[in-house]
Length: 345
Image (cartoon, rainbow, N blue to C red; front, side, top):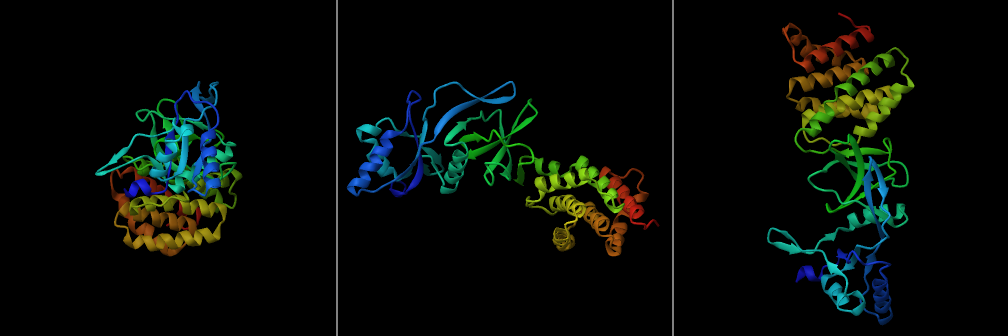
């Protein structure tokens, strides 16, 4: 009974053969307004199917049609509308079972606003793509930072075998709208796909760590290049807005961000990040993570306290016959910083 009276953005479906505008809804709304009856909101964007041909998203040549209509009202009121002659073609999507609960699919106000935002960017002609769950996986969450979709939040979809990633706006896990014109560099990552070891793997990026380390050498020599600054900017676009749950992943994240801020000469951001690291270090139990932060702090600040902390951990590894990969990398980085900063022992 409570569900039947709750006002929500319910999803109504029309037959696939249906063509033309949702005139019946507008006529019903006008009638209610004239008669002083309860009003409702509706959103009926034009949809056109999108398919992939030879690795490129293209619109189909099929006629435009309305197959979904969103109505903000209660179940009771919608049933009343369905009983009128002009709205008999509309129907709810099948009920969803959630434990003991059962309800018709609906969108939250936030999800609806996101969909309408994207629709406005497409001039209310929304290309819709419904993925096959077995072929596509939900990946990283991103926020668009440039272009006509700026500030919309979306999801990265990976296509196995294609080697490509497409940016999609997901509406309540059942409708996907591709942002066809979003290019690399026009979005920032706000959360990573947490399936399996994906987060750890993304942060354990040897190529990026190595490139930032080489850029730090040129920075200390007084000659950071435009490519170095572009790399630092890209690093911040990809990682600066992430929030990690574990100390180990925080250490890896901060070890990427602090060199990036240092290369760009952002003193305020550097001070803020150093404060974050100082607050985190006492809580870190993993030796290699503590070493990673200490070496990073030393390399970015030329501070003797951080140098002693780094050597206090790393020097004990030098006697190991075959140190693990991360240990060997940190030994080399620490030696490099000693040389670049003029503190060779």
